Image (cartoon, rainbow over all chains, first blue to last red; front, side, top):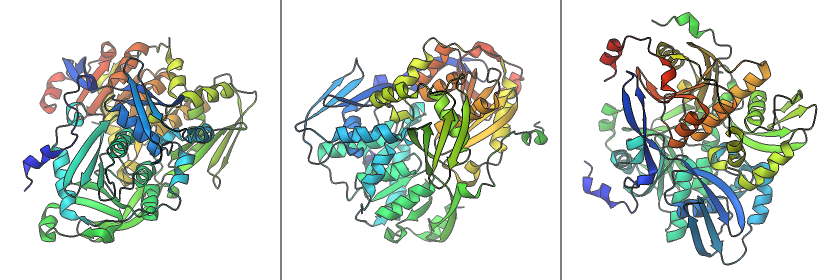
Amino acid sequence: MIDDTKIRDYIISPNLSGEDLTQEVAGVDQLGNRIDVSVIEERPLTIFLNNQEIVTAMTIGDYPEYLALGFLRNQKMLSNKDKVDAIDFDAELNSIVIRTKRKTNYEDKLKKKTQTSGCAVGTVFGDIMDGIDGLKISAISTKVSHLYSLSSKINRTPSLYLKAGAIHGTILCHQDKPLVYMEDVGRHNAVDKIAGWIFDTGTNPRDKILYTTGRLTSEMVIKTALMQIPVLVSRSGFTAWGVNIAKQVGITLIGRLRGQRFICLSGESKLIWDVDLSQIKNVAK
Amino acid sequence: MIDDTKIRDYIISPNLSGEDLTQEVAGVDQLGNRIDVSVIEERPLTIFLNNQEIVTAMTIGDYPEYLALGFLRNQKMLSNKDKVDAIDFDAELNSIVIRTKRKTNYEDKLKKKTQTSGCAVGTVFGDIMDGIDGLKISAISTKVSHLYSLSSKINRTPSLYLKAGAIHGTILCHQDKPLVYMEDVGRHNAVDKIAGWIFDTGTNPRDKILYTTGRLTSEMVIKTALMQIPVLVSRSGFTAWGVNIAKQVGITLIGRLRGQRFICLSGESKLIWDVDLSQIKNVAK
């Protein structure tokens, strides 16, 4: 049994009170009846690092500071050594400026970006593959019962997805507790917001689990590796390259987690089978 | 009743015989049993326009020529006036070069890209919004019975999605017939392949319907507008900006098409209600 009170332990839960995040749109249904439908907002946010324009992201618009910080971190334009002096968000101009004490290495990065901008997966491909060369994540053990608890809690958490659809969620978890639940129109944005939150709060990522509603593509696995999170879990499926990278860096990769079913394609030796298998067998047909 | 033989009328159907498109990966299921799972391939494809490297896309790898042509078309780096002289695909280097007779305007485009590269939705944001300013699509009427036929045929078509999951499909249709079925890890790639096929074959887009398994985001609607296709249909949901752009350019926008349910949020006056509503009422609860 899941303890319902625990779901309320989120440090950040989905932003249901944010009035600007959904919009009522008038249309018709299959019977020709007039209906009003809640749809997700999607707006540009232009991210600057000091004086340099870096990228325009399409986002629902919440937590712009975490999105900007996380994007720059996951692009390796901001390192642990960079001290963020100020963050200036301008809601009217849809822009945010991250200001650092010393000059960052973004100019070199931006030059590289011009050459290989891998827009197709939402990130700078050439750059980011460099970033995981030789990277090794310290593995942690994961209880199967925790996977089931997380899945159940997350699926029952009121979210923008349940309200309006067309949105991805990424949730930072510790053991069987979801801690920070971010949503966005792009799954990479939701992950970047988590990265920004970790960077901003100085939270230790090395004992955490990252849960995503999106697919386990190379991009998702690479971002998880850059964030030093050892376990990545999804209700969706895998790509072959995502699996290869997870094996290479040592990430435990679990996909197709629905009900009591799941598949583990990397790091299965780190799973602790603490659930009565005969019980699962009855449900997992 | 759907005539099964019609499903075989595809000009291009999903690439199930493509050996390189999926991979068997060993893992464990929720019982700890060893299993082999089909997962989708994902590999980089670097697109060149003449001597200039433009982008590295993550793709399953089929139809690289259509992906490259369609990407450049939808980025407005190739226009109707540009004559493609040669297409050189190198499978070992994961690269493809589109060669044109005269110099294209890509250098200006690339300069703009450096400034505003909107990786977050997989396309060059600053550029692409310019492209739809003042654009108007000639509306066509759409029969509701055709929407149901298309949905049923497409859902029952053997696909990489049904085989391995974690992939999006985009299907070019005419009336109640699906014609060209493209799949890819990114939904924008699947759409770009359709754009490339249209460009390469000189097919008239103005009487077509585009069906996508993905969400109706601003990017999807903009690409559809640039392709001059008047109707965009999805089993998934909407974003508010996607709806706004569809209204602005005059695209009929239908989402959440599942079974006999759907929602139309733009162009509903162009729907022809040729289905017995009392029959639908019984199913659409």
